[in-house]
Image (cartoon, rainbow, N blue to C red; front, side, top):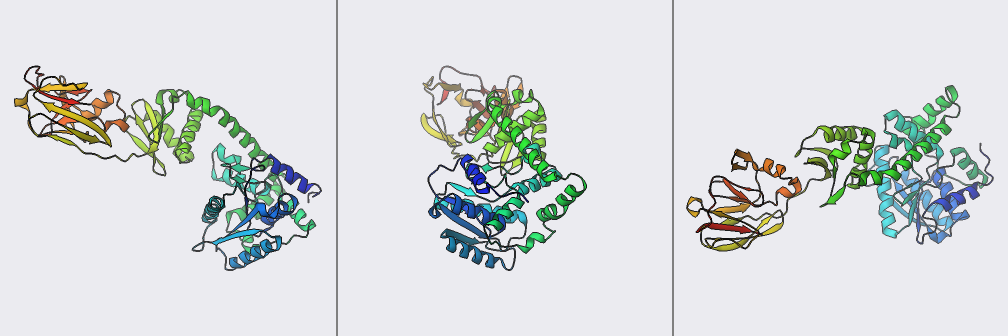
Length: 448
C-alpha cells in the first residue's frame, strides 16, 4: 500500500494544474457514494474549497434493487458536510454499463448548464486508466483510443485523481476515518470492467508482468503525448488543403489530400468529421479513405449521425445532407412582355421577357417566338433533364459538372424549359441548338 503522507498536498497541486481552478462559479462533483468519489469529495470539501463552492450530483441508474438506499446515504453525507445535492433517477432501470455511463454524463451536463458550474469533477483514477487502455486494446481501438481517459475533456469535465492509484486512495480514506458504500455489483464478473479488474489484470501481473497496470498507464501517457503532437500540426496540414466552410459543410482539396500519407489523410478526415459532430471509428475511417481515393463526383457515403462524405468536382465535402430551400418556378405564359420572380432553393431570381429587343439584364438570350412552345417555365434542374448541343444531347447534370458547378449550387442554376419539357437555355452555361439566335424582332428573356 502506498504511503499517504503528502496525499492532500499532491491533490492540491494537481488541482492547481487544471484550468478551471481559478475560475469563478460552482464546481459540480459526481458522487456515487463509493470509495473513489467519497475521497474526491472529502479532499475538495476539507482540503481545498469552501462548502458553498461545491455542488454534489448523484444519479440513480436503478440497476440494482437497493440503489435508492445509495441515494439516501449520499443525501445524509451531503447534509452532514453542509453541501448542496442535486439528485435524479433514471426513468427506467438501465441495463448495461454503456447506457448507464451515457445517462450519467447526460445528467451531469444538464446539471452543469442548469447551475452554471465551471467544471464537472469525476473520481476516475490510475487503475481506471489501466483498465480502460487494456479494454480498448483488446477491442482493437485505433491509436487515439489508446490515450485512454483524458485528465480533462471539452474544458468542462476534469479528473483530478487520474494520477492516483486505488490503494493510496483507500489508504487515505482509512487514515481520515472516511466511510463509503460498497456496491455488490462490482463483484459481478458478467460486467467487463469487473472481469478486467478482478481476473485479467491480477493474472497478468501474477503470471506475466508484475507492473502491468503501471505499464498500461505509462503507455496511455505516451499515446496522449503523440495525440498532442498531432494536434499541434493538424491545423497547418488542414490549412494547406484549402479547407473552407460553406452552409455548415466543410470541404477540402481532394487532390492535395490524396498526395499525403494515408495515416495523415485519416487524421485530417477524422478532424474535419469531428467539427461536423461525428466521430469516425476505424471502420468508417477506412471506408472514408477508400471513397476519397476512388469515388467519383456526385457520389457520397454515410459517416453516421446524418453526416455524409461526398465528392463534388475536385473537392471532398463533409456535412449533413442539405434540405432544399423554397422552390417556386416562374411561368412565362406567352410573348406579351412581362416580368416576375422565380425562387430556386430559397434564392430569388428576377426575370423579364418580351419582343422588345435586347434586355438590360447581364444574362439574356433571344429566341424565335414562332418556334417556342408556351408556356415556358423557369425552374431548377430535375433528374433526367438534357439539353441539345452542337455535338448532341447531354445531361444537364454532367454539363453543370463540366462547368465546375458544385452540388450545393446546382439547384440554384435556372433552366428555361418549354411546354414540352425541352431545356432551351441554362443562363450563363449554354443554350439549346434547337433554335437559331435572332437579333431583330425576337423574343428576349433576361435573368438577374
